[in-house]
Image 1 (cartoon, one colour):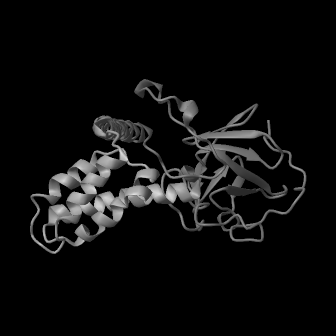
Image 2: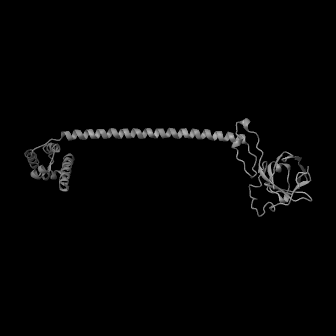
Image 3: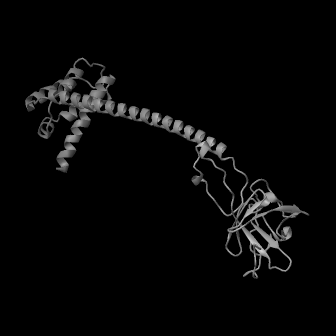
Amino acid sequence: PPPLPLPPLRRPFAPSGGESGRNDANVSLTRLYSRPDMESVTVKDLQGQWVSSYGYHITVVNATVSLPEAQYRLVEKDGTVEMDGWRVAPAKSSAEEMLWQKEGEADLKWTFEEDVVEKLEEHGIDSGNILKGKRRRGAKDYVKLNQELEREEAHARRERERLQGEQKALEAIRRKRRQQKEMNSKVSTKRKSVKEIAYREMSIAEVQNLRAKLKAVDPASSDEKNVLPTLEELATVKMTLKILTETLIAKAVNPFRKHRNPLVAKKAKLLFTSWKIIFKKSRSA
């Protein structure tokens, strides 16, 4: 039966580069090779699945055209393709749209739907994962693409394992530092507690005797034999505000902060500083 008793098109066909705006760099990509124009049309240009301007679907494989109720053969002639008296108009066609003409009939438009995808299950590739669009693309070697994807996944897996190893090493370093910090803190606390246990209470009279020993020594002299033991003994005293105010021991220690012997000067400075803190705390209270 005649394949296409065709009424006039409902809308005009826009040729390649027309007002439809569909003619861009990708439109001219065919499944097999690039055609920057449509000066001629071959059977290769028609491979794939199409839909006519009246809604029925067409499949072209090699030179065979399959319609819902019939099949036809394509023939290349004079730079175009013919089928049952119909000819493709190259000047009005593009890679996405083919305009068929026949004398005495209204023009017919085919719109490209998708390429016919080869069977890839034998290579372990699910053809359902291949995206299908309405724009003609260049030929794809899906087997090669799948192999490249597997290589990229293996590389990503190795990189992920490397990063995980580095992360574990970093966590181990941080954990070791925390343990060392905790250990140092415990040692410091232990030393502090031992130092606090060494403090002893002393009467006002005993502190006045130590003050008298310091007064007996000239701060400008280099004699430290009598000064250093006295300062070390004062460092063990559990000092109070009452002892400081009644004995005035701080005034006796103050001149030794500039002693020639650096050890004596350091001991005197530490004592004086600690006693100043006692004075400040009493004022704030």
